[in-house]
Length: 124
Length: 234
Image (cartoon, rainbow over all chains, first blue to last red; front, top):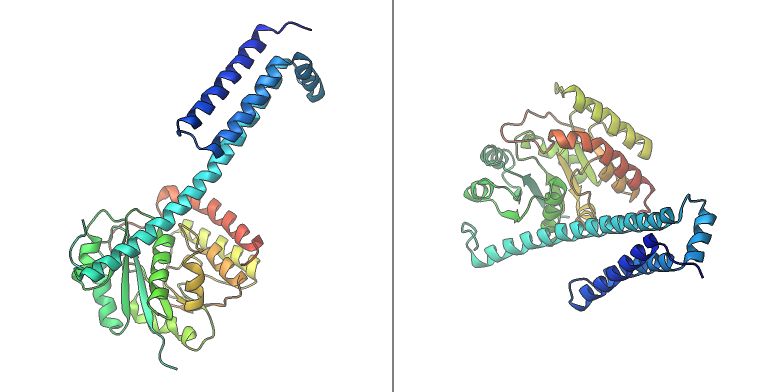
């Protein structure tokens, strides 16, 4: 059994801390379960890579990376990109929903004004 | 068959200066046609000015763009039993005298979307070079996609049939309803027609097409056109 390097320990412990924080956010209803999934997976992967030297070595070798740290960073970066792309799609969807709601609201307000028979007055 | 009910939909964003004249002109030249103003999140007195003219106004709480304003107008038209929706700019570019010219192919049932075009015949209108280049480009894109020549893809003077409005009230390009819209509609089997009209310079206010959008526009429109072409028509 090899000893863990200092970098590995820091990486793994950070990942565990982040995972705990994410779960705590879910507990306090600050983060939706659906959003936590990607975070939990990512932190789990990074923690496993951090703790398991043989696995990290094997993956580093298989990917042709220059060092173990690069492998961990590469996984982190891949996760960040996945998350950003996911957010972009969510934003597009939110924008579309907002768009629809604004139009719906405009038509409803118009109908309300008509029903009140006060087309000239500003509704408050 | 009774005469089709026509609704003129006027998207207006901060158009208090030109709207009264446009409305008066519509009243004078097309007195029997209903009008709806879609106030697209204006910060000026667009809505007040329109109401003063006795025209119904639907107000967006935020600015959604021409496409969004039209969608609201289509929804209104569909819900209230109109057969044809006519898009007309608030800034006075479009002469309501051409309404019948625009509606003629709709009335005979030869098309589903009628486009008032500046370029079908020589009408004296000369756009700035960058606009002309854009027109040429998107006219080419549409020709490539549909095999039909639409010379004025960005014209904001159009008539839409009820079936078109039914679909567009839910599914419509958000900001610029031009080349991608025409491709999407034609892919759904709707027939497009162009009629020659004369357009004027805008009378007051700001164009929707600002400088920032001029750079973003070609990218967005080409991408959206390709997507409209490869997307399976629903």
